[in-house]
Figure (cartoon, rainbow, N blue to C red):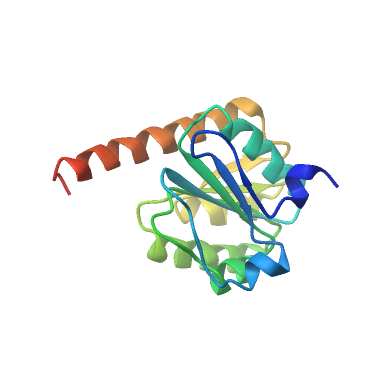
Length: 168
């Protein structure tokens, strides 16, 4: 078990952080607030996928990754504040996936949705794309994460600028 996976709350320099909602102690808090910057939520059964995203986030100085094991855990302990990106790296069947994406879209309408699935999961991909999500197949390549993370952080930073100038 790597130290990144076992750390409950690990701060990186310049407001970068990782919150692992898989830990019982943290989950009992019922809510977590991402401190400043871009909040990214990831639901994944395989912690190595979250670690890959976490490594990619090190190049941004305004992002926080909050990981969950199951969507049910996200429902029980939603992060407070604005979520810019939601990543579902689970193996749900198409119908429950579509319902989850709809729920997430209603909760965070401005968030980018990404679904990670296995190659050859056509119905899974159709459910994701028809509900407005980007679909990546495993293993997700670094350049794919980079494009999504760059777009997310740029969009969130631009939105913060508009709000601070009284634009929203």
